[in-house]
Image 1 (tube, rainbow, N blue to C red):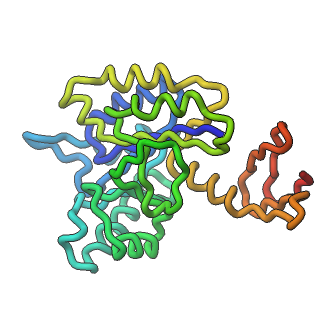
Image 2 (image 1 turned 45 degrees about the vertical axis):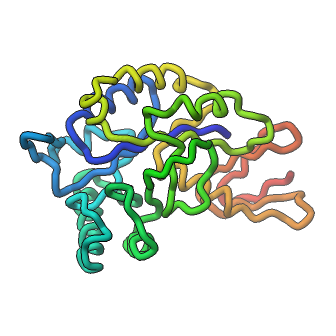
Length: 256
């Protein structure tokens, strides 16, 4: 399986153009929003309006980023809890579904923050530590992306060649939409999307869809003699068995 996912932070008005590009190329993304800055406009920044959230990000995923984009290492634990939980609560009211993930503001995280976020319902959180690889994460609460959108060339070759010995490959791109405006390089994303989209053997998914699928895959129950597998999840899982694709249906036993 090859998959592509995108992750963009802060919710500035340039998300409008970026979402339009994603929709045109039929790819999916996750947008990490600070509910406390929605609707704000000042000399430096302008953020999308709260009433835009549901329609603008339809078909994508809304995720948390702290109410006020805090430096989590510089605030008391109680404030840490409030920033995450209140952001989750506010965004859920706007998007209409459970917010289950986040990204760390400024890429800053610690064991305390990871544990706290998990206890508040966060099932994954993205860092800014690029791996320049296409591996599946070992720890979704320390989810390191493949690369920033300015560095996709360093990962593209390996992903496009998709060596036969790689069963699961994930190309995870992150950034901020305001960077395209600031650096006047929207063409970087347009050219990348032209190359990466429309591939028949690639799954274009949100962050939470990737997390759910990998969790289901890792939860498969296989007999000791490798002749059958039980899928206890609610998600179909595709398996490559003796040169053929087989589907482990939710809640069913599959003979291998």
